[in-house]
Image (cartoon, rainbow, N blue to C red; front, side, top):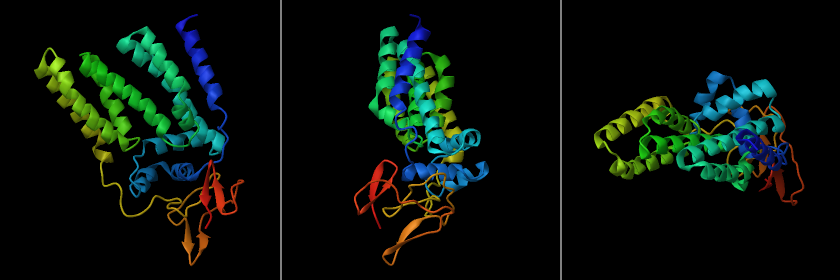
Length: 280
């Protein structure tokens, strides 16, 4: 069987494992994702400065929703598509770095990982974060550990996109900076190595400048927040006043669409997507 045939089979098997929750209800954070992405494209970065989240995923979700709608199935399908794209990327990463056997092993791990399968059906940025981190890490190893300088042009934008996807990218950047030290010790030309590192990470820093703090401010992201938040929501368009908060022992809502009480949790709980939350 050809490489393409094996890869298609692996992607198909992974797809079959990940389809089960594609139409599951949105839970609180997913509702926030859909709500933020429902705003005009130019408003999204400003809204997210109230929360501290980088904007890349929400901008992509905005475009995806314009094409396919804002239903649970439609928004989950974005993460599913991204997660499936990580399988051939894993094959490339392992194969190009350590050989064919490692490539197929890595691709199989990505395809069958329960952790990645869970986030493949969440309307959140974690599937995208995994894909971009995979590209950034592999290109870092190519460029700095193996001295293949042509990959530095891949590494810099990949790391910048990670930073624009989730603030965890700051920790990844810190780890990669530390990893430069052992890579430098193995480098043939250390002067060129550090020049490449300075220029590459400097380019990432310049690209990230527009997305640097201030995030967050004191205001919450438009959407439900806190232990009393409820989302159980389909296609909500949150506004800054859209929230569910306790008021003198009762709950109040100013959403543009009524919150639903849903699910089969205990009498003291409400179901929001896959989770049960204490009722107000």
